[in-house]
Image 1: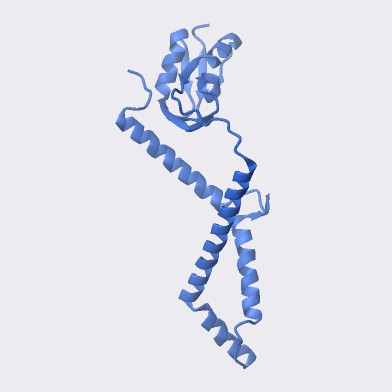
Image 2: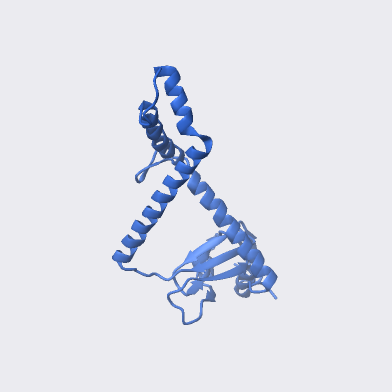
Length: 212
């Protein structure tokens, strides 16, 4: 039993809702011995402490610490790491905020995005002189001066809205194509940069959990 090979995989950022963490909460584990696998999954890894029960907490771990914990019970086991060398465990308590507060935040966010986007589009159009271009183009084609509200402005506005929908790959809750949206791609890049920075800072500051 002790000579079994154990395969373990842990993502860079693991979300948990329980203060007392077991290895099965944060890792994907595979082993041919069912009894050993069950015991390893129940192995206690860490407990988040403190009186701030409603606040998120983070802790950085080294995979070597996880291997050390497994070797406490199975010293001759061959542990193969298929995941990250260092990872973050994020504790997020399960809270049910009032629906009124959630709706209010959503409304305020929509207002900020709407007016911010409108100002950005108007500032861009003013910088590149879209109104003057449309006026000259209308004069050349129609032979008369533009009133400022013509077919060009109407279809340009429709085109902006349609282009935004196509670019962000979303219509309501549905995606136009199965591909990730540009916003999702950028958010994943941002999250990866945040996780990498957090891990490096914890390693330099000595606050990560590693072997001695």
